[in-house]
Length: 291
Ligand SMILES: [Fe+2]
Image 1 (cartoon, rainbow, N blue to C red):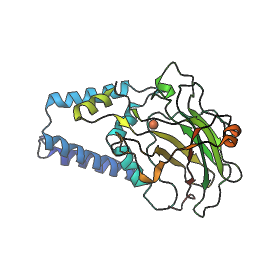
Image 2: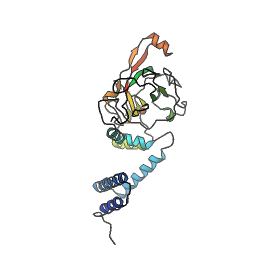
Image 3: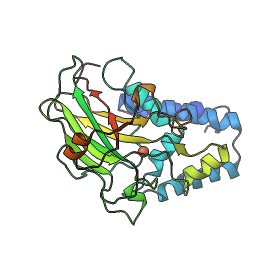
Image 4: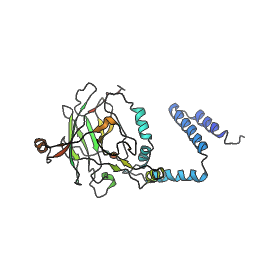
């Protein structure tokens, strides 16, 4: 029989997985992963104590996860892996709105609202904002019936799922573009916030000397029949964390400029009072298969 040594173990493991894994894509992934993982362990000469610490870190990350909290997505985000996957799958084409991370706080089945409705279920005293825009195809033609799934933090810097005092689906909603491709909703102007630091991601950020802040943003998933679904944010111009997002998710094309508006007619139309903060953010979708 063969002895397994530091010199032959990687080769033997790769041969074992490479020759027995049937699915070609899975074979490519598992053998590449093992090759890099073994190289990493050898590179840093991992001690048994460090290895066990890593096992406990991943165990604790899993224990933080439930139907409202996804510490593994947050971990992927702060390691820059989510944005790497995003960049590979949605290369910059100069057409259509750029994508960015989903983040750990998406919740499906938010309430569906009429255009112009407010997603504020609990007033946190934030600055009232009207967000409007048009969803178009690459030719600039409007896409009617596009669904916009929208979510953001409340003015206290928390998502509803992080704060038991908030009503369910506070600051979330699904809107549908009208025949001209337009959408509109009332919200509070988002503020920069800290990603949760009470779990393993906090331990990692602290040990690495990184801050946990994200620049203010509103999340969107925009979908329409025949078009690629778009997961993105609109960031707030002037935010102090635009250049140091804890999850590396900023893109200059996704920065929106909130302007103070004294338009009393518009305020009346949307049942808010002037002056209010006004953001226009148009989005472009790409047809399925258009790259
Ligand atoms: Fe967010």
